[in-house]
Image 1 (cartoon, rainbow, N blue to C red):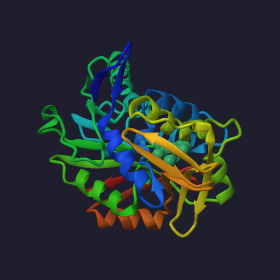
Image 2: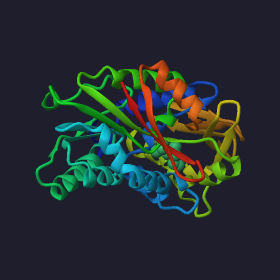
Image 3: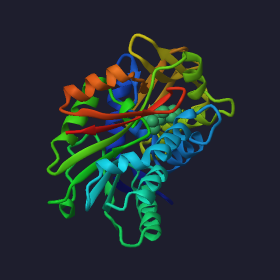
Image 4: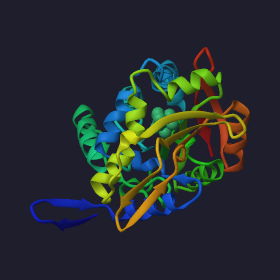
Length: 317
Ligand code: AVJ
């Protein structure tokens, strides 16, 4: 981030956002990486999504965790440092922390730095005796664990089906990287499962339009932080099930031919042209087991709700 002083206000220029956005919008088809959804407005909108009637993901995962936390405890050794990837509001973590006395250190990792600090502070207050060491960062960059966890058993916690945002080869690379952490004892992985495509499409295109607002926020963010001049309402929100790739895709589709200034360039859109903003891959027990094996893990437990909509897999090295 560079701070640039204008005539009467200071605007924050996010040079990395600008660079990546220009690269993605120069490409065909156009794309933006979903990690850029999560500024503090986007993180707040995502929290609203998790409470929507159509978005079964969060409440189902919570129920699976709550119903099985006793069994999950068997995989968490005494003195464990719990490292959560993409910690967000850390609400699911509380289910684990309430039941797992073996956890001595909690390391939440998230890309939304402001959100991360305030959430880490809340956890710190709620759990006296727990050491909380927040780590701001991009899960896809090389994750270096804080020195404080050296010599302790590490259990990864990667809930929310966030792994599903990654293309399968990237997902495998991340799982392999976590597998290589010194002291790694296990990984508790939340992953969304293949189901009726109507249920999936509704979950990503809710009646209240919160997901649409979340999707458009990426354009508003480009305006705020990267010198963009998008009219977010001139793009329609779309959620499409891609059966071949087993994923829900989110798109922002330009309603008109338009030229949009972004930093030093102008991005041109044809009417109907889309910006692909997110993939949310859905797995099966088989495809997850295969991916785990390909990255050095064994599936010790595959816990689901009664409908088989969402899985919490406990992986062992
Ligand atoms: C946070 C990546 C798991 O893919 O379900 C929710 C993000 N996007 N609605 C998901 C999201 C649209 C979410 N993850």
